[in-house]
Length: 309
Image 1 (tube, rainbow, N blue to C red):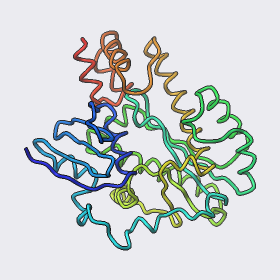
Image 2: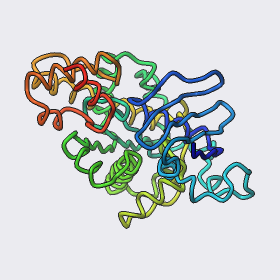
Image 3: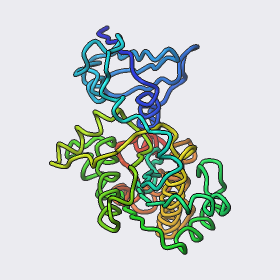
């Protein structure tokens, strides 16, 4: 059986796990996750090694640019990613932060936000309870988002709804490229609302290697703004990214409310068996063609839902 083994960063493995959410299988001992696609079975290990095996492992491995890396298993000197390492001073200074929501959910759009926070606003935002949205309940997130927007901080929010998402996916766009372009556009929008000199830098919640992000936006003839940095779990350290996370999550929740109203029943979040049941119910009541407006149809949940029917 053809196979490839590559050493990848933790950030890339985290991104892969989100990307393959709907295709996950039981992982063997010592593995972070295992997923099965039409091309290969992907197994990521805690050591950082990722095994691609199946009829066409190269096709799957190339999604993560490993085919373009120079011996990815061997550490390189002067890795390009070091240029994007976040300065400690940035986290306590005036900066732009960006984050997204909805990428691992079968139903609903991807919502992406960027916010510019001034140094003297950080303490106030902490008092309002701004922190990593993953540690907040949905009602609290909605409340804090309202408080943030009352402060009139320059921000931008973009919603990539399911019809457009599915269209781009069929055109060959990976979810990673969609996310990169969404982040790039919300950041550009915020920069256009302020004097760029006010911002000490830009921090993106890292979902892929910086070089891959640059490649994605370059394919659409866009360039990375100066002083752009990447950090995994950035919402834990940056109040600007945390604020962006809350705004994006609130938008996602509102979009899910609207989809539930259209469906006539509560649309669940995530990509679990409950989601499969909801998708089957939706197909039965409205027809499979209507699924395009509700879900990321390339997820394995679609096949599972049809199997239930």
